[in-house]
Image 1 (cartoon, rainbow, N blue to C red):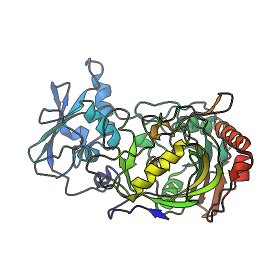
Image 2: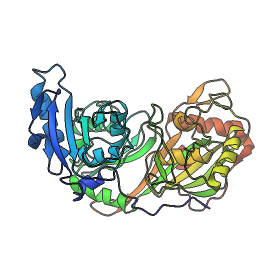
Image 3: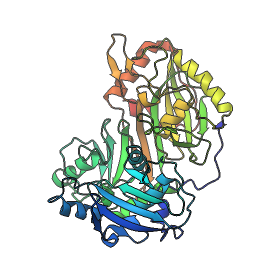
Image 4: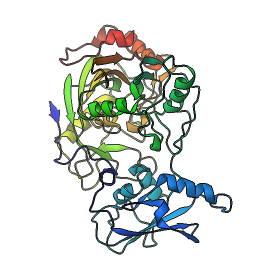
Length: 461
């Protein structure tokens, strides 16, 4: 059973892609000035690349050189004057100009007052016209030099070309603007230097964005199997496999409610939350407009646990990301919304399910949003309506999202040999599974779900 329709547009386009492809329509559309502290003008040449893109390395050098004599050394104002109408949102335009910042980061910069259009605070959705002057206070680029840190890693496989890790929860994959340390990339830098018998280093691809070796990502609180590249050849070939869907990614999750049907193809477009207020700007939702990207998740029920509810919150208190649907004004609703409301009510009535999830696309928070939208929020996922799980003694067994990337299969980037890795569950999800099975007794349902490939005995131990 398939839910939703895919809008007809380029599903692979990401923020900033136009700039990276060298979009000729944008090149030369503005004059550029660089100022420091609103006083000293800098020549545009050293800080702005061809086509009007801010040069991260040049900006870093400018910051380093000015720190000795400036009280506000990090403030750099870049001015773009448009010479023609672009019919483009401000946030998308800035993605093409400041490519070392993500669209979400630029939207936050706009919300925080770091951008002005014609001297006034704009919205991210402001459309730009000929003659507009856009002023941006550009923060320092993220650090590109990775500091090795001795952080424990569970290495599943390593050769001269790739590393496969069973990621722990509560760790970022790579440094971000506000998290420069304590990431998997920091841990891998130390491991390769001090502990690896094979040595080597992470691929240099992505190093300029502090993401060396990063081929794909898992959310901070999602655990499970993830692969890193040690060479540039391996990096590009792995990326090609992901892009052309030669990779088998299977997740398991514990969710609120008795999920039905047994097999469901969730085909609903995802995009950023329409609200840019704090607490919502990080979220994603189902969107049936131009910002919704095609997103497909296959959900297969592996076990259902009946009985009363036992979780960390009172009935109806589902967190800021309530499983009840959020539909922005002016959005199209469909039959899915009615199904979702019914399922959300059922999820509140108790019971849990263990589901296997197959990703056909790889959008941000895809599994979490799809399940929450249909009324089956992941246990512990407070952003999207899940609640912590406590046992009969009131002990919290899991408070993070109960989502685990358990299987990753792909062709080896050099030998082309088909490889598959299965990451066993970690302590908190193991404890949750044990409690659900113990308290459900003979009430456990195990439906036949064709296409399921996860060996639960191997994953659960």
